[in-house]
Image (cartoon, rainbow, N blue to C red):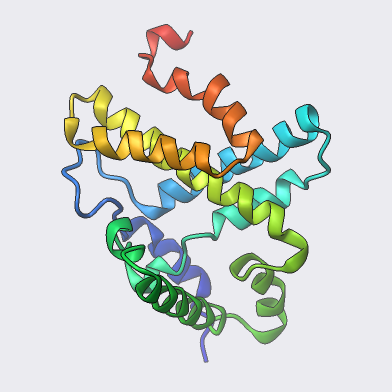
Length: 193
């Protein structure tokens, strides 16, 4: 079998996010994954520096890079559908796991063993996965803010719901990022200098 893994990964750029929303600026999972990786790494650093944690920021970033790659196969399932009820949520997680297995099968066995840790939660990495989930929500909040900056009110409710969801996660690193860094996303380029 040919090893198609990296060619499939490059297709992340074709999977659009926010399918149920009118977007001023489209976002694909490749762009989203990069942003989540940067934010996840920042959360790990914040945790280490400000909360005395011992996270591995680089590992956190790599987990974040691959957190949505199953969507190459499944597409981006809208959040209201994905979390509609416990049964759908459970079935969708099974679908994601199967998609991840399919992607890993595109690697030689010896290399796939190394990648498995980034596709499936490892017990030792539970806290890092929690940071990645928080980074994923923060990235969604950033998208909502950017859309509002374009004058698109379509994302107003999603922004408030996402902000609440971040606070409900009880991740102090995410709360710190929300307080200290998120306000800058509302500024224009001239105001960022």
